Image (cartoon, rainbow, N blue to C red; front, side):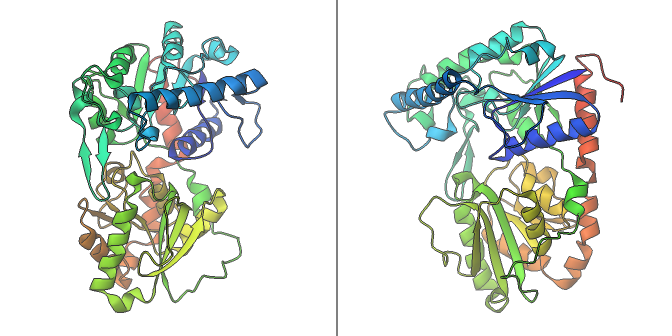
Length: 432
């Protein structure tokens, strides 16, 4: 069986990392797999190709990217507030004629928006008759425009039910017209519910949202979470210990590509640390908050009221593994996570986790065993669970071995085999 993965990039957010990990997992499992990107990768591999090679292709990619943003601005009255939460795929490349598509028995889509594949290109892919598997790193295939049918406040989340009835009057466009751009694109996307498309959700709660879609008519995806290289994350870091590390302190780690993205719960994190100061002011003197990721908003180092170290973006896995191993807890105050790869990374490194019940983490955290799940979005309860998790007897119970064993089912081999079995439902399975 010949498998072609298609993704915009291998660098950036969770979708890119998940695709790269699946590619590596399938390669390790002996699968005949290739990867077709929009952007050139930072690694060299003859099983990886990309579209933006010639000057003309690079220019086209820029035109598609900018053109889509301008279209969205035109339909939202020039408002930029939700510009990056919407994609139309009215412009993009058609890869149906690429020789690797012709080579493949199964085409597996990952994140393809922002000028990579257009709806026209997707329709032409479908006309080839090859099975098309699509991993849902968000819910864009099931909505009119948005990547998530949710509205986010600083500490609230609400579901937008328009995607269950065909969209229109889209709040992200500040529109009150039933036939607006969201409804138009929704009608164009109905072919995505038919053969040859088959969907993989990365969590059970995401699968539930997908099944409510007007486009999908109750179609339910299979659930297969992203893989993780357990051996890599279990290795004791050989990097020199950072000069700031003090073994007498307790470290709370928060990591995201963009920490102040509204979905990541940056304001909720501030409320949690404020609650910590109220509940346990003496213990707070021995806590340090480690922040990994970009922060675009106006940020001051004392915003959290406890000792805080801002480490910026970290792209090297070895550095992140070291941080997970130095940290006493990894936290997620996100309002929503499709899955939660930083949580599985932390657990694979032996670090327990605390998170709100925010969809994806509910599939990862075994409450009271490898961490705590907190009712959304109770910041006082979250602070109390942090303090509970730092108690010596709880730390012994949530040991390194317990945390690591709790994600054993997410190993590269296990997840690769689940994918190969799923592909085999539509194409001849390979013999390993």
